[in-house]
Length: 169
Image 1 (cartoon, one colour):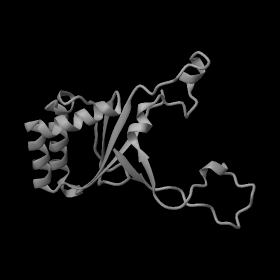
Image 2 (image 1 turned 45 degrees about the vertical axis):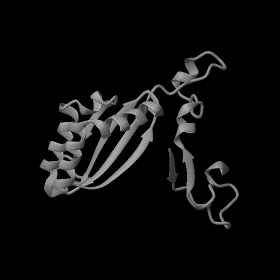
Image 3 (image 1 turned 90 degrees about the vertical axis):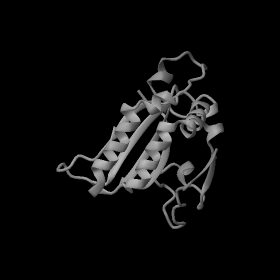
């Protein structure tokens, strides 16, 4: 799976040479292609955390989980429809049945400030292969297909964006 990601724009040529940003952050303009299989197939050794500090010197440090984040832009007037959609994924155990480890769906809380049209779902996977198997099982699962159809029918979801993360504990 290859995903196109936006990159940082190069700082203006008249910026001082003593920029506070490392030179590695000054990316070339334009989109970057990232092969997610290659990104998640090898042990992650790109960050320093307590896990690295506690491990044996030279030992590979693997990121134990990949977290799939779905950011929804929802119709705030159809929050009840979206909540029913989210509950079917969680309470119907569709996600677990297909191989995901859900952290949950997170809906906007009215009256506390912030946007009232953004919701999140976080689902964990042991590897990118597990995520790909999950996607295949979702398409074969009748409950998943019915819930997707119900979400489309209600028009409660306006935009769905997907991102992938690893967790630092």
